Image (cartoon, rainbow, N blue to C red; front, side, top):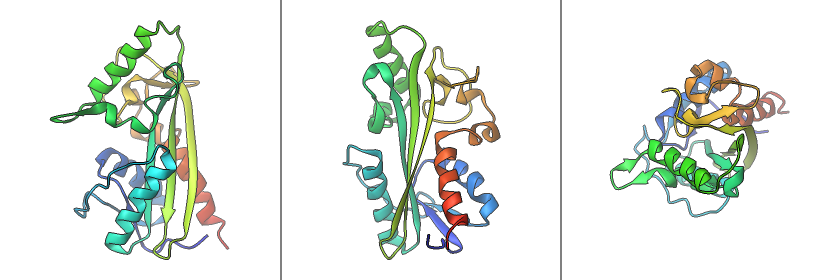
Length: 203
């Protein structure tokens, strides 16, 4: 796989995601910048797959900067909601005043209650990473973290739907875990581990 160079642009405006990527890439000695930090616009995500939306974000950021770009599209898929919210995970949090993930989590739980779904209420976090070089070369890496959704919300750490998601084999939500604990098992960490392995093993 092609080398990254000294600087990797992360195509995100989400400070929580950017902090996670910085921690995950620190051992590689790569300088990480965020699209939000550079004032880049957020492109409209019009695809119905994680990889499609990641590609939109990567291409937009790469064309604006000429840097290698890593874009991720991720979300929570709830089994009993036919995989929703999925690629619309952030959309469920949209309000006229900005994103409200407490509202999104309540919406997801209310939908499960309306369907009388028995517990455990299975779900998974999915992350698709797309690495794009200025010459158009790309590589895709995926990570999936299985678990269940719970109520009420627990924990003030993490971001998004973390306070209602308990990974398989654990008793605490992602929102109750320390950043190091979460980064050791998250869907984003799993996808990034695949990416790191590809970078280390490149010819």
